Length: 257
Image (tube, rainbow, N blue to C red; front, side, top):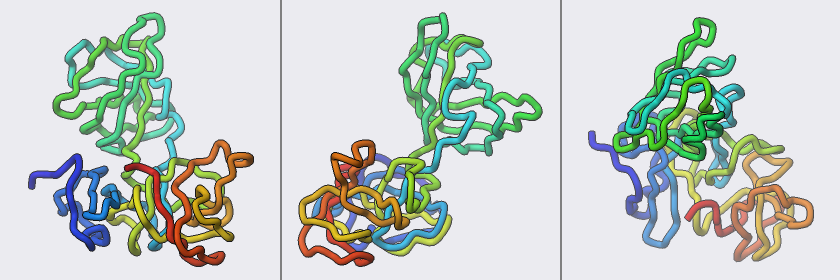
């Protein structure tokens, strides 16, 4: 089956289609826009999600997120990179469709700041010193040489893969969208990122004021204050009829157009 990627145009109701198998023809992260301009991203759930509640990207894994040594040199034009993980194992393709970025070049002076898209990688058991071989997506190649023992990289999972219900407290990843319907655990679904949406309200919201994820209620939103929430992510603003606490508020999402 040929997989779609980039942007597709959907019909009303397509945003509510879910699947427990990867047979829909869409790649994770595919963008779908409806005729009224609402935007959704194809995602996969790690936990059940209620309609109108938020989801965040999976938390970064310690010993995977930066300062990983390049195990063997990668020349310009190479299609793969061999790296050494920290003291945390990695399942096969944990970072498939995610990213490798170069965070330090040591004394080599090359490669820093480059980002590469990951196609596939092997499983790693750090107890047997297995290196991880990162194979890049077709069309992506090493742009500046990476030097063994000097270049350092980090791994970032696809933000729409293994998304978790937003916790009722400190976020451990960025909010990527809201579920437009009930979503079971381990299910492919469309997370809404832009446009009119019904979202669970924590507290009384004021029309046209910005919204952030709640500190108290999982998946809910509360009012954002520029005075006290400066480091919080704004996910949209309240519109139309205002809902009471624990009810659903009509809002305009502004996460990703």
